[in-house]
Image 1 (spheres, rainbow, N blue to C red):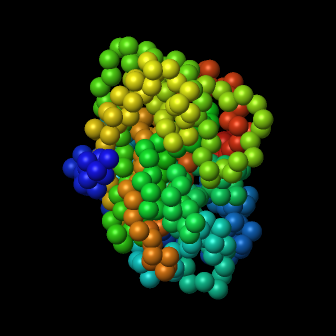
Image 2: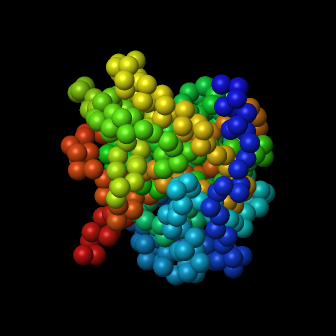
Length: 359
């Protein structure tokens, strides 16, 4: 494990596709978000979930006003690495206020007009950018159905496999791998990262697998369970097996989350192929340390992501990311996934409804 951690702490900027936003384009995004925030006014009801109809109307009606450079930057990653760094939105540390201690505090503070924090306007910024890429959505069972998640280290969660952890290595995984309606694209926006904590990414399209391993991992073999951020109250029904590897126009896709996969139930042949895939994902792993104002776009159908360990301070200066799940309507997944229940977890997908109403 020491060699793995050593490699993961080495940053790989030259291996990452990078798109630069002109200063004027970054300023235009922030200005439009600020205008919408002022128009709607500070409102806890809006800030808690960001699903208020007035806010959604403003996002959907006005994201097309953003400069073409923004829309081009928010395209899905274009290389086999499956990740893109987008830089850089104008952002000052003194406009953020304290890093909250958990997502509940972050949501509450965003709706508090008395706090000197731009978190609410930055939530709107994230929604505008995500809408340029596709259809932002949330989960009813995660962070209260919020469309923009706050990723901060939280006391008592240091060692778990979730975004609230810190001192534990966050293992490489597909976001919400357990669910058939998981995001096609994941957007991480950095607000604060004083210790240059690295986000790890590995693409299945850069691994080496033989034909027998591909065939074995393409069978629906084991389930993937929901992670701890969804709680533990799931329907009492059989967990559906899923295929680790899939195919999109002849290229590999991936559903992978070993921390929530009952690998002990696998036969030796499957476990050998799975372990080889895990080792290959380690081999091709690259690490990005986001700076404030930078975005990371992750193709969730192709790439697993994680995070290196770090020591939280819990003094208001810790790492703070905002995360948005994005659906790409043009993408289609395997028809067999439609029969999966997703353990009763339901998406909050207001932009899909808006799009449907326009037809």
